Amino acid sequence: MRGIARSLADANDTGAATAEYAIATMAAVAFAGLLVVIMRSDEVRGILTDLVRRALTVA
Image (cartoon, rainbow, N blue to C red; front, side, top):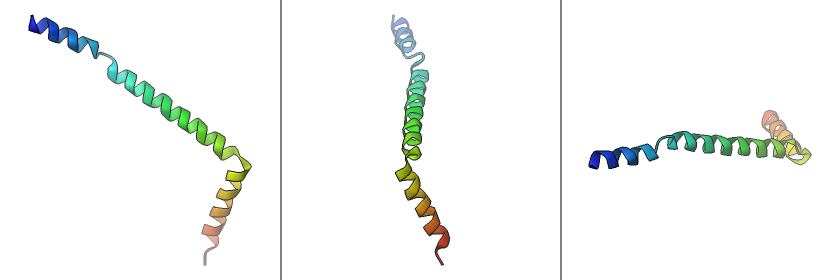
């Protein structure tokens, strides 16, 4: 009987890792989308451009 119970318990976890990967992938895509929206703003673009100019002109 223990073998059957163990098999049933193991069967319940089937696909759990795949679901976790899918959730992590969806979270990463959402975060990337948020970064794209932020990076498109003129304010952030100006700040980054200024930062790069300063870094390249340091003598």
